[in-house]
Image 1 (cartoon, rainbow, N blue to C red):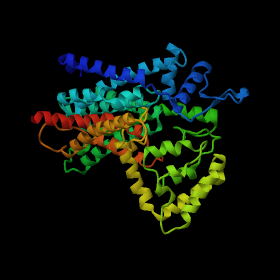
Image 2 (cartoon, rainbow, N blue to C red):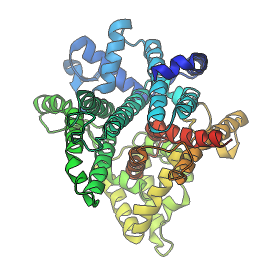
Image 3 (cartoon, rainbow, N blue to C red):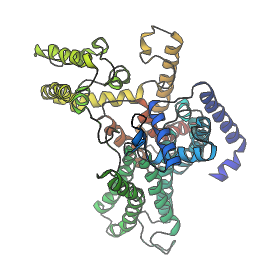
Image 4 (cartoon, rainbow, N blue to C red):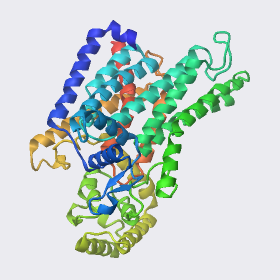
Length: 494
């Protein structure tokens, strides 16, 4: 990659400056501090100043800091490092550091495109990454996304580098050859170890980082299976290298979870190798019945803002519920009355009690029993489609109901523009997969590695009850590389 940068130094310098200006624009005009941001900052500050990984409890002076495992320690550790250098609560320092991380991600994405496609694709990928407003927008937010994207790109790049070295040495699965003289050389071993370490960072930032580990291991397993199923008996002995790769990636990815798990056992007295599914503390009530009911109808982000995030603590406005949330089956005349009744009872106190949660659970069970295909297939697909195609303006002042054009038309037009721009990234990536087997250059090496990650993450996110567009940003390194391959092919042909 360094040689490519030296060869096109003006191009990379100009694009980097443009990417820097774009990120500074979002930092200056749209810095984002959310409820999650405050939680992470509180954890980092307590960890740094008191040596306790926990939440501040102002209402309990005798227990000022309550240890927790509700959030993994990756992002709080990053914040603690920034706060240690620049002072506790220094948001500007955090965002400027994230800008540097995000620009580094652009270089890694370009290197990944160079390895799996071509130098031409690498330059295109660098432009797409550096000028991507969705990535730049989250660099201005005190959230995990920027670091998660960086380590996702790094893991994919290291895996591609390792596969390339094995291929170039004619060691696709790691047996000795005349050109190398050993099963896996030290560089290849280090690359697989680096892949696992980058995956570990993803997991320590967010529990769903484990999907990246599953994707890499799945890809290696499929490659091994293809070799074993082939008629090349000599090649069947070559799976040793893949086995070594699997062990290294899994070992380095999971090892950092051991001290975290031990800490949770010793401090909190329960087994928790990751973080709770709903990021809750042990004494918090998780409204699982309500969450299950939500999953029987929710498909879009606007319902997350209007309904899901407001419970408990705020009223549920039946007027903001889509009709499918009130009536799931027209043959059941009592369903609407039962749904409105439990909502009315909740609105009286705005508190989700175990009894109310059980009533929501009964509603959900009846709805699932009546339409299981809708619950397990149709709604997850619609949630995935919404996360992929919705305009990524959730950190901007645009109205979530942008399509109504009711309030500020400017916000709606920005949302439409962002939606089209998002489609301009996703569509070429999809077209690249359709033409992946084309003989016209450039091709895509190890496309299965990228596709497996995108598919696994999409399938998993279809099961959540809060379809937030930001959850798909971790797929953008793969999307940008795939899109660059299609654009490189088009420019090659012309």
